[in-house]
Length: 336
Image (cartoon, rainbow, N blue to C red):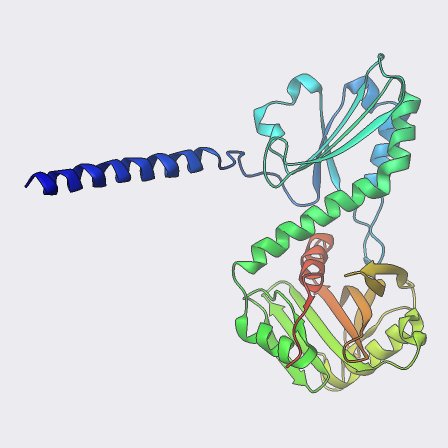
């Protein structure tokens, strides 16, 4: 009996130690609240006189500029300006915060780009200077980096959301066909599947999003030329993306709005990004698209990831960013 009681006491000590360790471990977990706020929205913290100055003009002009390749102008971000004494607990947990402040003690302008200060995920930018001109100078030097900070954060947020519920069958099909892992949301379905092409669709009663993936052998750098990329897109969509009426098909709509292209680095390799409009020939459908073209050096094949939106009479930038986040989720998978 004495031995039994010793064992019970020893077990109780072990249990208490385990609970203490777990409790300590739990205390170390981050306690920051989840960020709030609408997509494409930034809370700007600025005193009224600074916001009404030429520094405020610069900020509004930059974030209010339009994304290329949309049928109607839409600003990159909508801005909500509040004064410093109005920047309370509820606003501090917004996902995107931009602070500009005059500090007469500063000898040179300063721009800080931070993550997760008051909430998670969160991106916070603070620009401080002793004058309005200093604010403008610091912002001009960092504005592209600041834009990338907010854009990448939105992409990551959407990717984490989509990763929770994926169309696993479509994911596996893309992996087997193209050697890519792509995080395809559960509400997409495979509409057309060919040896070197796949069309993934998401449809509702009022709008639609789609993803096109296609590939062909790489022969020379002409594959990165925007005119080549658009010509190949038209070839595939005429073959495999029909419209709702007999003989109709998707095509690039470049008669009135010229597609905008740029060379970027994507997953540490060269890629061509194109933003433009699509239409359905012999019908009246259309909308924006964005595409990324690169070479899979493992197979020496050109791959294009293309996403489009159809949302008549509705804003399209947010939906296009959603499709873009799916495209940019790609990673190379192992070749069997």
